[in-house]
Length: 132
Image 1 (tube, rainbow, N blue to C red):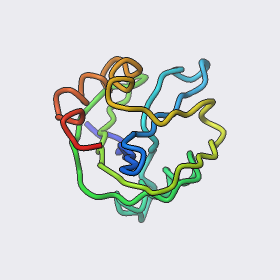
Image 2 (image 1 turned 90 degrees about the vertical axis):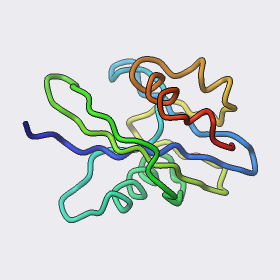
Image 3 (image 1 turned 90 degrees about the horizontal axis):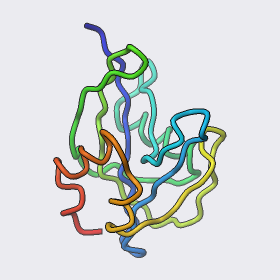
Image 4 (image 1 turned 60 degrees about the horizontal axis):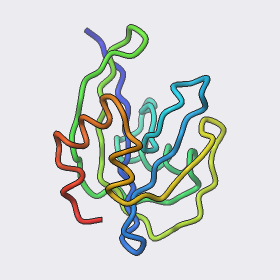
């Protein structure tokens, strides 16, 4: 089995005590998620995450630690997600072309907005137990 590696960030702004969620267009899943994407040839996981976060949000975020990794199947392809805890002091988000909306959210709001595997992984891996 060959799998694609995707990095994702749980982007926290400790000044706001909130996390960033971005929403895909209804044509492409339509749900809320953290920023991230595919690791390109020659990139480290952290370099890929910093690049993807900047491309999707315009934010400079610092990867601090790996929160969890999970394996999923999307459109018949195996995908390994490596999810990092990241921090930023920036608040202004400039969305890239893949997303239509963003929100800085508190834990309770985040729990209501996330669905499916993302929601399950956040609970299973203690994301809501972190200090925001």
